[in-house]
Length: 273
Image 1 (tube, helix red, strand yellow):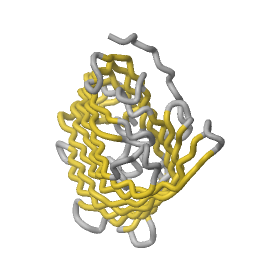
Image 2 (cartoon, one colour):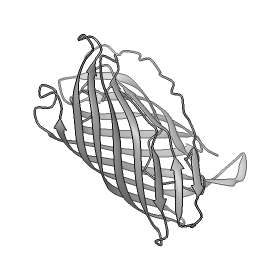
Image 3 (cartoon, rainbow, N blue to C red):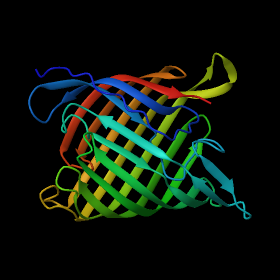
Image 4 (cartoon, one colour):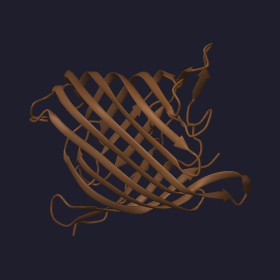
């Protein structure tokens, strides 16, 4: 068994949260790719479904109604820090984006979003990183009564540069086409003991599937342009801001596209407005 390595926790700059937005995951990870390898993992994230909020004004930094009330303009910074001891144990990436978008929610229980964002994705050493612009459109269906069901499907195109900080500042073009699928299901409603008017869901099931085609990149890093990446999380909130979490990751993620096949157990810390 490899040594268990304590990892550095990285802060990020833009943070706007609402009902039970995941902030920090601290857990124990088992690597199923190469022998018996385990480690402690810190995961700091503000993952999101494009254009979606659990309530009006939800997880957006800006969420403004336009003159025609079916249209909204939004700005929603996001960050994901996912660090393990090896590239097969965790994606080992630091990802930051600042998406701007318009959404149309004139359809009952549904919403159409158009979004663009500059994004930065680096490995944990910042030796290899991507900087690109992404444009995409997403169709979302959401229902919230006694449960929350949120499903979003879209298409996006990213174009930019891959750079190597320790190779004489070399860089080359990077391009990716993606079909993302986001799902979120939450149920078993409870009340915050400190404020009975604040409700939260005790059980959360979330998943992400990215169907990627990398059409411009270093062929050594991406010899196969078709790359899948998927995650699945089960979170049980035994109190409003603290959950026991099981997290499964499989596939190939930016920037290094090394294979991940891991199961993590740990605690999730969240914010509740």
